[in-house]
Image (cartoon, rainbow, N blue to C red; front, top):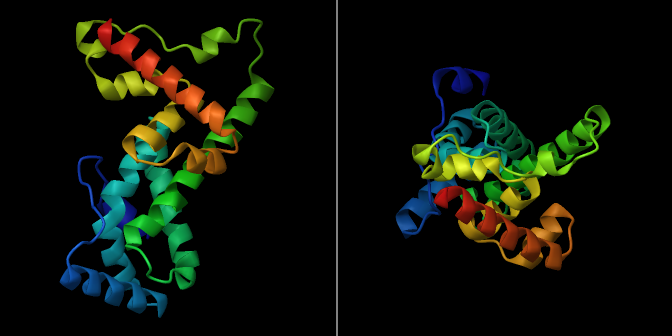
Length: 198
């Protein structure tokens, strides 16, 4: 997949939604079956059809284009490794989505542990609060406001409000209590409102 990464840059605007009509669903099942049998061209086609959506969720989780590209590639490598376990009960994109989310959350947790080891400060609130926007134009930029959220609040907001997960699912994925997930969502919405109103 290195060749694909060099020739294509995924964009957050291209979104691939779960296959709805029977003909497209049958075509996807055929691609998955062929890929499970080792057909790299079939897997490459699955990659092309789903890379936009996977990149978008990675970008929203980490708010860093380079890291989102890396996480997207990691998600597809993981998908290739685990493809035999895909039973086809859902769309391929639905199966891929939790792989990408889990990679993003794992990366965030390891980054948080790293920062805890190398960052020392008496005032941790500076590390959690979003920086004020530079001007009116920045205040209207939702992606920039989202990037300013503390990582925990941003993850819960993306998973709940953007991706549609329930709080119990988010709690299981992130390893926090359901109440914490709800509190993080409330905090994220409040901080986003403040950032967009400034």
